[in-house]
Length: 275
Image (cartoon, rainbow, N blue to C red; front, side, top):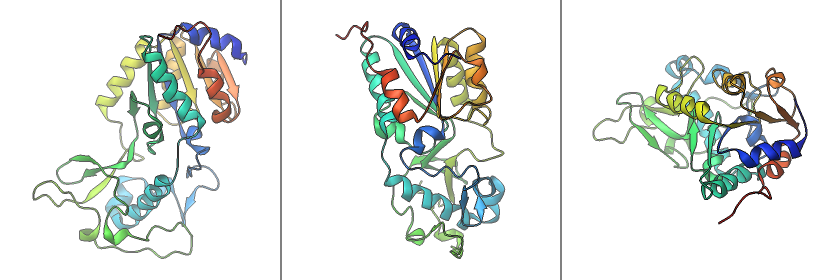
């Protein structure tokens, strides 16, 4: 792949439908813990052991402690220059009749906080809940999410489980339901929402430029999105700390922190007509 920013900028200036696929790397610079890799533990567990339907069925209190901790951490985090560059680019290009859509694997809502409007959150959101009884999905920014979780969720390995009774965990507020709520996120072993996937496919089919930002390109099905675009001859630019298994399939690769590489890549091109 090329590393010439001027070449990329020429392609960017002509693109009408831009898809930006983002992963954990775009949020790392906002101080968001990823729970992947060597240091990725919460207490004694890695995310893969807690973020499953089985773990929730077995121990909903522990899983809620983990997600409560992550929600509370996220409430103190802010979008970084990469999130802001994406949101500003979308706003500017929309005035030129061009579109930007963000397809994110992140559940932290930092793109939303930065002002991105056209956002497909394929793995759900930390700030949405889904009822295990009636299926209702709702936005939820309460802190704490329920009284019993106040002050709970400390990540230290010595911390004892809170063992909160199910009836004190987050409950559905739909009329007379009171079902147990779960985080509205896609857990390991679960499939992505087919409606969102349909929208993703539609965007991938029409895009004439694709950016892959801060993703290791190993989590499926998202890992296939950009190679699929590249296979039909559309330029793909990867912005990441290091090369990934998919790098060789892309036209451009820019290494380094996204907060440094992305703003100049998405800044206004001198040929852009600003009305």
